[in-house]
Structure formats: structure tokens, C-alpha cells
Length: 403
Image (cartoon, rainbow, N blue to C red; front, side):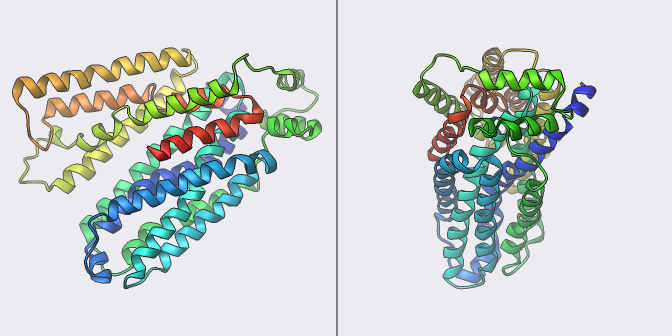
């Protein structure tokens, strides 16, 4: 495994650079709560609208939907690398709009508009990045490298929740709340843009544009070898003559959409919301509900993050994708079923979970991390031929944004 890591270090570098975009989405999809729940927002705009949280989510997801759809034809024309670079500008512009908000009724409008513009960039990141990484990865470790998508998403969620918790504890006043919360997005975005200058374009994309010589050079670079190496020549030949399974493109796209929707409704949001700190034997009077939710959410995310990393590096390439999804779903259903039994047998109606319930939720988290968390994006990125891979993943991301 260590030898594979060093052999494919350049592919891992590609994944780290472009998955910064996935991290940015994971961060921004949660961190708006640090702004909408702050007292500083009310002092700047007066009464805070009841639907502000819903409006922020709608603005972000509307942008993601638009960005995912628009990124597909641009990716087909310009390539994966430059598409991500172009849409990074949207993310930066959206962040700057939010940073410029100061006081009065315009604050909310600027926050909404900025969230929507950022969503356009994030939608492209989610659609193009896994296609890019999949096309650069060798088949032997493709699942492991593409699956880092889920690690980036989890990391974004964790950092955003830590930010929310910090704002809840310190309660800063004035626009510093959203300027710190959103301003931190500019640094990783700039790092991603800078990193894009040093990584190669997808060899499969170049080959689809009949740029075989450039594709061979990039493939050799990614494999840390020379263009004369027999293994490189063999892989290049296999890519060139590759014929996808005889399945219509419509069936592939529908499969990607259904798989994404099943992942969306797999219960993760429920489990993350109720995985509190009951295991720490704290009473409700010792901790506020905010403390329980935020810290418990981080415990859930950290367990998921560690479980996903272990799974990717030790298991994902040993079992077929379908069986991983099957056994993960089976394992996920067991603790949820036990929770239902506990609920009806003990008449449990507390807002906060009991210690056994918390343990069950964490077991669910581990089960999801070993299948339905990282595997769907890996499976989706593998079932499409190069010519429509970006369209298929874009359709999956768009369907997720709608629901």
C-alpha cells in the first residue's frame, strides 16, 4: 500500500487540489448557521426573518443546480482542469459579495446573492472534480482515490461546525461574524486555483479530443514514469480502445441519479442531528441544546471521517462496489431498526438521545462510511465513457441539489 501511495503520489496531488472544491461545498453548506443564529445579524438588519435558514439553503442549492448543469458542456469543451478554474471565480465572487455586506436591508440580499453565486461554483466542483480524478487514477486504486471526495466533504462539515460553535461561544458583534465565517473560504479557494496551474489535464479528456501525444505525456507524468515504459504504453492502448458496456446512456444516467437520491435519503441527516453527547453523561441542565447539537454533530463527523479513511485505504479495492453498497445498507439498517424498537418499548420521547441510542447512531455512521458514504460517487464515476462522464455526474449532482 505504501508503495502504491508513492507510485501514484501525483494522482493523489490532483485529488487533493480539486477536492478542495468539495471541501468548500461541505463547509459552506453548513456554516451559514453561524451567521443566521448570531445576535449580530439582528442588530444590523433589525428583525431576522423566520425563513432565513431556508432561504440560504435554497440560494445555495439553486446555485449548485445551475452550476452543475452549466459545467458539463464547458467541461466537454475546455477540459476538467480549466472548468474548475473558471468556476472558482464564481465562488470567489460570491464570497466577496457576502464580505461586502454591512448594515441595513441590503445585508440579507447580499448574503442571499453571495450564497447563490458561490453555489454556482460549488455545483461545478461537485460535478467536475470526481470525473477529473477518476480519469487520472489507475484502475487498481481508483476507488480509493476517487473516494477521497467523501473525506473532503466530511472535513468541510466538521470545520464548518467548529466555526459555528466558536461563534456561539464568543458571540462577536457586527459584520465580523460573516466576514470571518465566509472570509476563511478565500484562502483554500486561492490555494486550489494556484494548485491547478501545476497539475496536468485528464489524459482521457485529451485523448477524446484526439490529442494523443499530450495524453500520453500526461499519463506518463501521472504514473511517475516515461512514455517509453511498457506499462504506460499498455494502459494508453487500453484507454484508446476502451469500449464501455453495452448499456444505453439513458440507463447509466438514471442509475447515477437513483443512486444519488438513495444516498441523499439514507438517514445521515437524521443521525447527525441526534448524535448528541449523551455518552459523556451530561445532563440537560449542564449543556444547552446548541452545545449538544454542535459538539455531538462534530463527534459524529469525526467518527465518520476516520471510518471513511480507514475504509478507503484498507477495504474499498478488495470488494466489488455493489456488494459494498449491499452490506453497508444492511449494517446501517440494523442500528436504525433497534432504535425504533427502543422508541416503542421504552416510550423514549426525549429530545436528546440516551447513551445506547448515541452508540447506535455512531454504529450507523461507521456503517455508512464503509459503503453509502464514499462508494456511490466512485461507482458513478466509473460507469460512464469519457464522452459523457461529466454529463452523468452533473445530472447526479443536480438531482441531489433539487432534493
